[in-house]
Length: 261
Image (cartoon, rainbow, N blue to C red; front, side, top):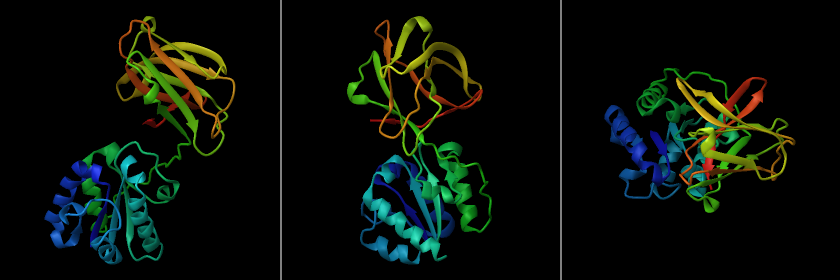
């Protein structure tokens, strides 16, 4: 039995995958709540019975599913089964969610990074016992950015950078913006700034560059003590925000996950 664990809000992405899996293995071998008339969220009714006998538990990890206590109960039960070698738990990452460390202890399928077709191929390979999952470097991202929506207006953007678990000694960030220097201004509103410089053509992806504002800060960040930024448009136009990158070592930067709040 193949069990697909998900949140209702993610059905649009997952239902085509469920349909294709059922075409390969048959409807009776694929359990997907969308076909039961019940909400796709957690241990309800038939879910408990099917979970008890499932062999492959695919947990579709997203901001929605991680925020659901019912879905959490479902995948934690699957972890218990997996530790007893009674089932195989395979996380499938759907978006730029903050992956729980316990799920980083196993290989996962990165639908967010590779696309639905490739992710489906990997799911089928797992079920057919073909080990095609690539062992990749798994980095726990302690730093996360937050767009503070309640404070933001069209020509202003409030951002916070937080350390989720432990102190981060390096506090150097680039707020990526699709603007020229004369169009915007930015500041760190914690008054911890050493240096602030507008930078052009930062390499942020394959064949993609962005302008931005580089902030070099005097103190580390720690849980409960975020760094706060305010970006303002000088001409009143909406802010075109491309993300945040942080320096992790000399001459090496990487994106941090961004969440709306």
